[in-house]
Image (cartoon, rainbow, N blue to C red; front, side):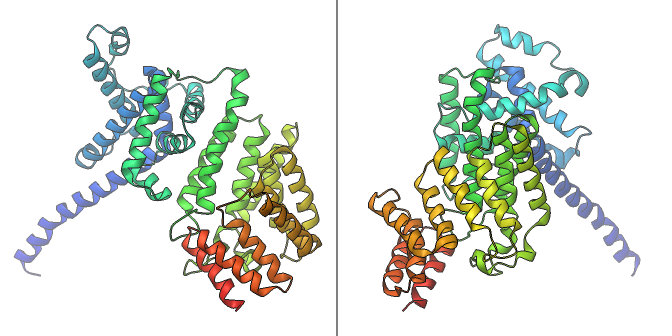
Length: 434
């Protein structure tokens, strides 16, 4: 290489290095935000006593990091940098509201001091902050959709775009839900604090239900092209692990975590390379995630050890544990699964539980007994509009040697199903019965 060529090569290297540094910095922003966002928003909410403001200024700090870190480099304490910038933005907001506001005076005191994690980031309070954040985001004054969106945004650290993509709704819809949720919390004067002990147990069920709904959408997408939305399911698992670390004496927290782990263990075998659905009886159980199964069984053991008996999530986890222990569908302990479904139906009755019990009954005692249960559900019109009932009825009729009726049920189920992969599966079953 001549000198001119060498000079050009040397001149190009800093530009490439700068570009790489920028990419690394942006990745650092994303990683820190995903890991620390709940702690940052929670600390800001405790600091300002204003949940909506805390989330807004945390987002402003995130925006500044996306611009500043690629230019100036990643700071030594990234989470501290975000908290400090958010705190300053909060002070600016209070200044705009009123120069004499008492809260501004409190916040302004020492506002320019350097970040000191030993002083400003109380390790004992952090756990309470994240737990309070979950309780506020899942407050009963909000609709379920708002609770799900707000939890994913402020506790999970997902962007509006990520939430919209996960639930197949427009980004403006997600943004509007989150904005309305914050306004509702402000109008209802919901304080940023842990509920009193007597209310915490009541409200815990609402928090767990939100996490269950998020995971359920990830494990069985209700619409769209994919059966699984792994990122969404993993986020629900991560948040539930946080809950299990913060609330150690509630069996249903551990029961829900066990259910998620044991269900997610089957994800690698549930779809083929082309995304097509693989039924339980056709899955290669060697592909099941044994580490997730071990974690799930451990969480189920903790739920049992806490006492007071298993609740709805724990019972569902016990069913999933039966599947995890079985070498095949035929060798599954279906009799035990039927008994667990009966217990689940008593403490948390629902037509979906009855339908799942019917499936277990068909495996343990034959399709005709199960068909009687399903026909009772059909007469009661308890699952009108759902593709689940006709799809199960189609399976039972096919096993009973009634192909024409089974085909009509599968076609009806396909017409109701909004998930493309499940619809393809149902139509394929109908075609094979012609």
